[in-house]
Length: 192
Ligand SMILES: [Zn+2]
Image 1 (cartoon, rainbow, N blue to C red):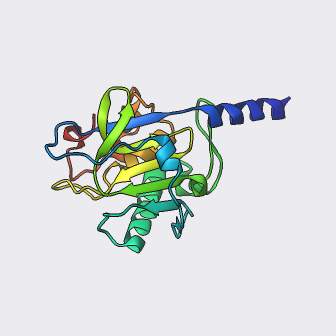
Image 2: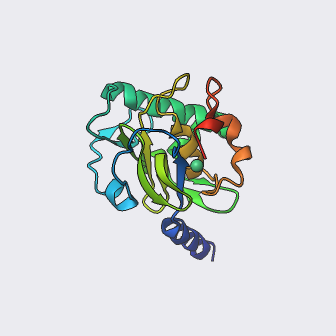
C-alpha cells in the first residue's frame, strides 16, 4: 500500500508543471527571444557542476567563464539549502519530501540553462523574465544580467526556491525570502 501511494506521489510530481517567472518589464532594452519549457528542454546539457552534478547548458553571449559559472551554481545551492532547511546542503544529494508530499529529486537531476540576459517568456502575468523554473521538466533558466549592486545570476536562488516548494504565484515567498534574497541588493525592485 505504501508503495502504491509513493508511486502516485511520484507521478504527480512528474506531471506537476510549475512555471514561475520574475518580471523585468520595466527595463528599457529589448529582451532576448522567447524561452519556453520546450526550448529549454532541447538544449545540450553537456556541463556538470563539481559538487552536486547539476547538468548545465551555457548559451552563446554569456560573458563569465564556464568554471566560474559552475562553481557559483554549486556554492549558492549549498547556501540556499543550508539556510532554508534544517537538513542542510546534504539534501541536495537525495530525494527530499516537501511538507505537501512532493518529492524533489537530487540536484543532479536538475538542468540549468544559463542565458546572457532577460528574455521573453510565456507565463501568466508577465512577458519578460530573468529567471524561470519549469517544474514539469525540472529546468531552471537563469540570466547572467548584472544589476548594479547585485550578485550575478541573481535569480538563481529564487528559482531554486521554486524547486523546493515556493509557489509559482509567490503566496509563500515570505517563508523563503531570507534564504533566496541578496542582502546587498533590493530585489523588490527587480522581481515581480
Ligand atoms: Zn518567482
